Image 1 (cartoon, one colour):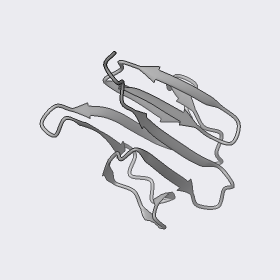
Image 2: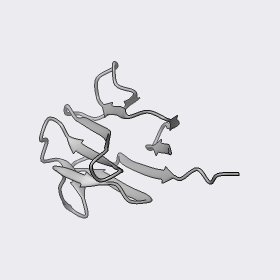
Image 3: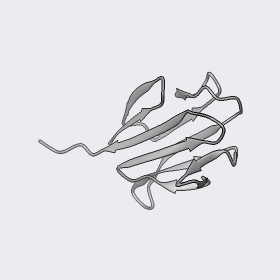
Image 4: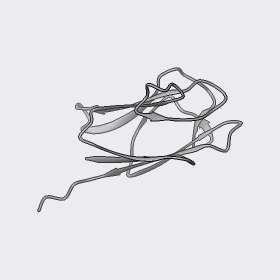
Length: 99
């Protein structure tokens, strides 16, 4: 499954990765530019056969549907907002269709 992650200033496609880090640290797979520290982890959960996103630092400024994000099973399209910021994160899961 491919995952497309986009923000206001960046877009990347990840193929076949079981873990993706998103955050303000330069060592993350996808970097965000915020005035506060954020670390989100997308990982494949084999028990539900889907990806989940975790708010690793538990930062209450990370919002999904206007509520603080803790853990979320990803759907096809997911939009995450950041309080006190214009930054937004879009995550799309693309299923590969067998030829």
